[in-house]
Image (cartoon, rainbow, N blue to C red; front, top):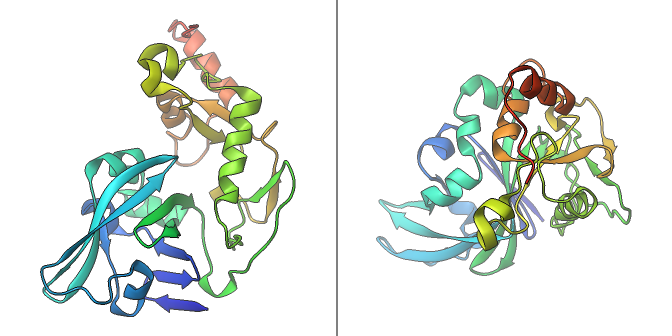
Length: 247
């Protein structure tokens, strides 16, 4: 059963929240009274806090829900803010272009999966789909997601299994530099940016996704009007006489 409230949509175990200025600036977001049941906080009292866990990219982060001055807020800490790169959406024009959303998926009453989606969502046209393939449907401005949204994580995981965890541009390897802390960590770059697509496409992890380090990922998306290609960034490194890192 769907429940739309302000910039939220609740659909069963899935909650969708538009990333607006308050999300970027204040480490959290308000929870309208009519969707408090989703967060299991409908019986909270003034001044009370409820601890929750937000799982983002396989890492669990502490957060809490609090009721203050009759307003309910979900607040997280700077570590997940940095990991989710909310600062990418600090500019209003960028938010208008990318139309970013947070998607929460309920794991249990105190734990929620978190994903950031940079594409438009029409709240009234969300429906379930089933994807049983090595390719995954992403990138439509009208987003259709399955009830178990974690299917999208398989796309990232398969890209890592195919391409490994070294940066496709400079060769940086998080595990070699940071040891156990960096094991299995890499960012996954969509060669065709999802927000630029006019229709639904099939994303093939073999050809459409590439592992990149955080620095190169930022540079690939540095220009607003056009994404720099991996080949162009490699050439830029070569022409600048900045040696690629081969570890």
